[in-house]
Length: 462
Image 1 (cartoon, rainbow, N blue to C red):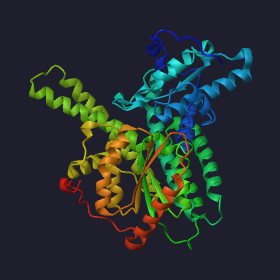
Image 2 (image 1 turned 180 degrees about the horizontal axis):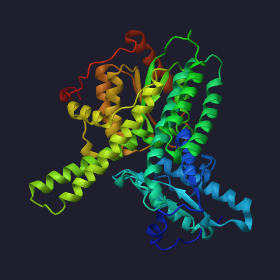
Image 3 (image 1 turned 45 degrees about the vertical axis):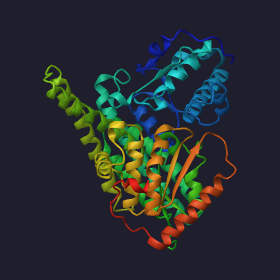
Image 4 (image 1 turned 120 degrees about the vertical axis):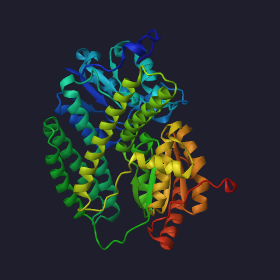
């Protein structure tokens, strides 16, 4: 494929947005492997032909059509879509029709470069005449990833409920993987088991999702948890507990982060990564929080014409958040008695932790809110070390690092920054090995003893 001069910029509004998915193939990038396949199963259950694309095989293409100044996930996902479409064109020949495909690339508001991925990728696709009619389907955090126009109106509400639940179940399967793999009886048994479980649950979301049959899905999840528990060798003692925070793509995409969880496990760790559903909850919570701020501001200024719309927005987002919490609690309540999986943080609790510590504010937004508060929670829960995983030059994660390092030093808890840009650093594994030595020493001294929540900023120490 040879690039030529791109179309006028009106394509950014005409071919990026929310499009009907009937008779289209929805191309889903693989960020979190399990979550992506469960989401694809959910789409299929509602009549959408969804496909999870192969990932990281088109990285050379991604780098060819980016400058290197972009966020690393932009290079990876750009390569994924170009590699897929190139293979499709070669396979189908004259039958290849770009109008049959919609590339699924959500966005977020704020200063994070994620908000610009789909715009840049639109420009790249437009540089190929044969790919100009490939649409980019985008949801945005500005409306908590509403689905207007993509799913039929009468199905949109149910789809949103099931899609969120698929994210929660994907998180639980990930946490099952991380809980049993460091203690498996037979090396390699966990990976095969989780892969089979992922496909089973994807089929269940396809067959049961549109029926809103959550109980049947959880019943199957319980069977999987019980089977997974049998893989654990009880003779293996518990290991140092490491928490991961950071940019959502890098910390969940095993190819981009060079499978850091497995590397940590290789040096004696049990790892828990921040969940994907936490980010979804955050976007809903943040919209509700901002609507409350707008309401109070308009009341103070006696601007009463918009009060009704703000009250409606608060109510809608509040109901969504309440529903999400109920569904998440329902799932964890069923699996926790079977195996001690790490539970999710409530976003409201994370904001209270930030207010109490006076370290950062939700007013500033970005994933730094979740990462900083998440680290405080890891410390309180007795974790033996924390790793901050992010794309090289990522602003929110750099902010996180600058704020928490003095805290971690003061509390004498190992902390590791792990930036990635697709290259292999010569001393990368040695750095992880050193970090794990420190975490093991912390574990020997303290075990997993809970830490008091006393993280008020001491400026004289920073």
